[in-house]
Image 1: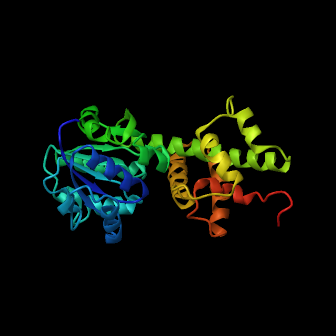
Image 2: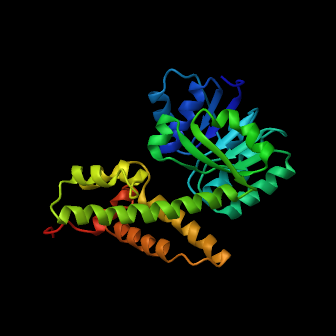
Length: 298
């Protein structure tokens, strides 16, 4: 194991809960915080083998920590827990490491980096990909923005829950890389939905179609993990449409600032809006197929 660190983790959602468990399993001294106390109780009930400290607020979580990690919801949430009157930057010691795994705008990532520099903190924006499965297995991919030395200081802790850690550039670069990732995922899953409905309407053996096409150029993570569940109308796999729409919104906002045309992302964003209007915002992203009724259904 790497050197034992005092690690504080803020944000025990679907991804964060699994990451916090891996940190504890790696032997680090863990402090946890979540704005909803029920998630803290749920995490402790699911992980009774670990003795953790429960913080009363973000600043309390950060006090005395070598590494502080956040995994919250959006720009406003992140600003509150990091820069707010009880935020972690109020208590972090010079030389300690701040890691953010939230998918947010590159703008706030850069703002936080400037604040961290003035406080002599090591800071990286490190959004992740790999889905709930990757978080549970500890095989996430992290896209890191910030100084190289900051990434290297953070690496021993991040290795507890990640299979790939890539330093993609300066502050904010992790977030823009994640935006590119989400654009790819959205296009992939939308096309997969159409392929599934096409094969169903053709009365093909879905197992045989998958066997035939998954070994060639059409293969993708989405196909391997969502072909069968789409076919069976199962859509409970963690990453909700509400969150994908947030991510696509960030991507399109950044694209406008760069003068980049993104017609496919914009179209798929509207497809997801249709699912939200049907009450499916908390379903996972593969539920985009619900826009395409099965042949013969009403």
